[in-house]
Image (cartoon, rainbow, N blue to C red; front, top):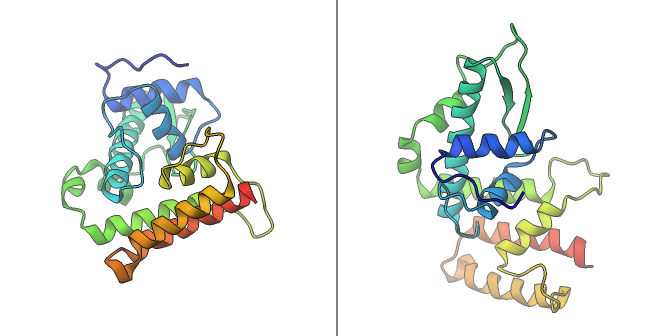
Length: 209
């Protein structure tokens, strides 16, 4: 599973390889991490803490997913479920709904001008949405089942190594205070970025309390 992806493959082909290896599906975040781990050159090999890196990575992956969905459906091979929380190959069923003719999300991600033209405010909303999903807002109030990917994503935002022996709640809180100081709106930072930092801290407190 550690082999590099073939560099001559486009991003849709590389994603297809990864999805075939995990029929149970995976989240968008997991898919991005797998692409990075297997040295895909089609997405930025940079931490997702920068809002523009996050947006570009997310857009490129979803552009490739919608291309792949169209191709697989056209060849009667698979149906492809696409959502931030679950990307999964599913059996092709003739006569099923297939690829919707009027799909605003598909239209958005297949239009590469949106990658160039999306303004900073929209990128900020994406960032807030991403960390909200990582926090687990999709879970019910009484569901305390937290996925390890939330922990990995939060530590990446904090630029902390989850394998470090010195990692503790004390270290995390110290880094949290540093990030709050840097990104506080009173110091020219972003309210949305500060919200993301707070959400990541909430995740980490649950793991290191």
